[in-house]
Length: 262
Image 1 (cartoon, rainbow, N blue to C red):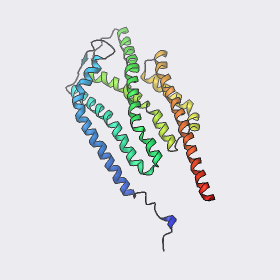
Image 2: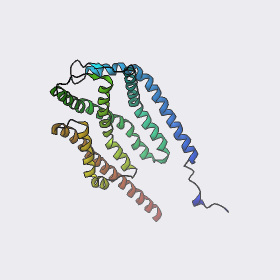
Image 3: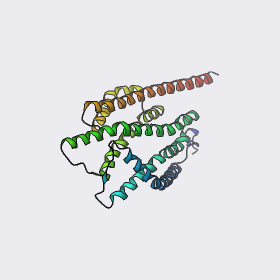
């Protein structure tokens, strides 16, 4: 029995196995770049360590090791961090290249803009976390230790674990506008849903801010307000993207109706 034209697979779509093979190729590319970045990170770990110690919130920060593996483990963590930051734009580009066949020409151009934007927002979040959030948290803990009469002897592993536990969550939160914008453009989110989720989102962001900052009102406000504004900015971007998406769909429907009338 002959197969009807409507039941034929779209020739523009690759078979499932080819999709899996394409995804595997992209993942391998990303791993190669990550390994190359790791090699470069081994050379950049020492300068980055020296800078962070010199730029500590207190003068003449003295760090100690409590295990023979502390220094080696910290060195590798710095190398991995450098490699991770360097691999972000390439990984996003590979993700875009993987989904590109399913996108229209305009969608390809618009989604490609997310690659440099994601790196830029990550770096802005990193700077905000390091120059605003981390000094407040560190000086608060330092003040508490002094008031209790405790001798301040910091291990290098514990100090940088405290630092990274603040930097990474805040930096990733700054990706929120781009994530919401992307999900809006592909139709998963819309401004109405984001407005309904506003109270929950505000509560979650304020809860995160209070967890990573000292337990005082000033610090909580200084971190909570930017995060809430970040969410509202995301809603604004979603509203603009949703409006453009609706206009593009209506324009396409109008063109199809005009063709049918001809």
